[in-house]
Length: 97
Image 1: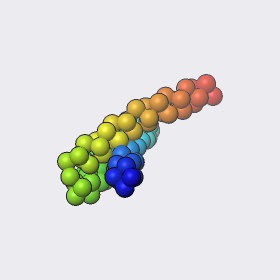
Image 2: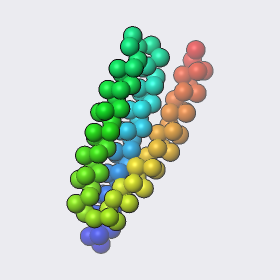
Image 3: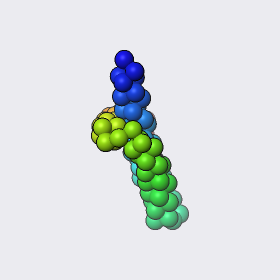
Image 4: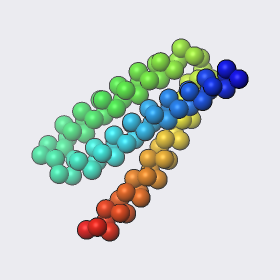
């Protein structure tokens, strides 16, 4: 039972990392359209998002290869969740305009 809880924690950690990464990417793209200097915004966002993801996966690496793969599964699953929610948000935003 303890391993199941650990696996759920690892997948959730990967999902949080993925949500931060891909959610941050979505926000960056939305803000870069109206930014004064979008190149710096995109570059700075990339550095911050990559640093968070790298430290998160470095943390997961202490649990072994299986944990890294489960974390990667959560990370990729978060991509689809962010894509789903942002499409809904963008549709609502376009309807209000």
